[in-house]
Image 1 (cartoon, rainbow, N blue to C red):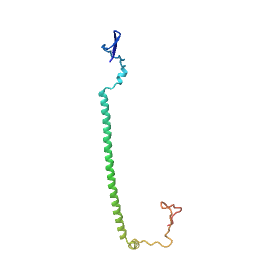
Image 2 (tube, rainbow, N blue to C red):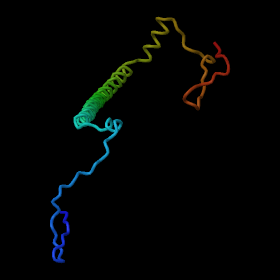
Image 3 (spheres, helix red, strand yellow):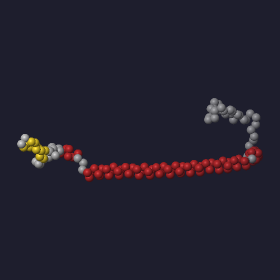
Amino acid sequence: MNYRAMYQNENVLLKPNTQPRRPELRPLPSPASRKNVQHPAKYGMMIFKVVLIIATIAFFYVREQASVTDLRNEKGKLESAYEELKVSNDLYYEDIMSKVDIKEIERIAVEDLGMKMAGQGQIYTYSNDVDDYVKQYAEIPN
């Protein structure tokens, strides 16, 4: 509290200043600066929009994560079905190959189809050290 000093009989008496205080005068804001002042309603609406955008992004992210998880599960099921079919196919192939009789195939080829067995000089063999391809440097004789 503001006190004013009064002197009476050479003594100092302190009395409160009862005079009303004037408010400090501030310059009025310019029109350009008034435009920059955001109203609480606009500020709240902006926060609401940001929260809504974040919630939308989070929703789509969670949905995509669930989709990825479903696809991984489906991939696992398809891989296991593929392995089962591969094993089954190998078993069928072994069963078929065990029933093939080479002597019977030769007999049908020679007797029924008129083919002849290859003779000496008609069979050419080659060795290939590289497994991926063979280079042919000359025509194969008939």
